[in-house]
Length: 149
Image (tube, rainbow, N blue to C red; front, side, top):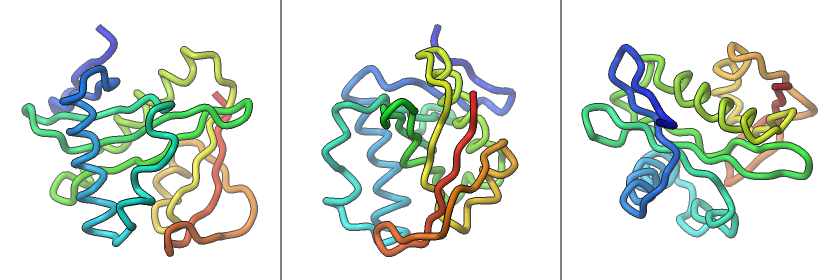
């Protein structure tokens, strides 16, 4: 089994079916498009087919998502999302653990991510370091962060 449920019952999976991908996209749309106002055509981009996608289920309901893709010599984590009613319960950390495990298994030495600035503390707590100045993506302030695996 490539996935496991944590003690809260969260089941983080690498997406293998169309249904799982649709579930991951539904979470991303709810968070990034509906909640944060990112345009749909920016949310689903040219990297979808190349990325490894993740979806997190709680009692068979999709509540979280992320994707991982090659970025030069590094792995890049993107689209990390947890639905609003399920935030603050450690699910984001569990998703990141799973993503980092997959990146390490694929022999990436480093993960890069563009964190929304307001979420940078979440990544600080996970051992990511900020690189450079704040910038905007999709109208939202971000900061680049890196972690050696």
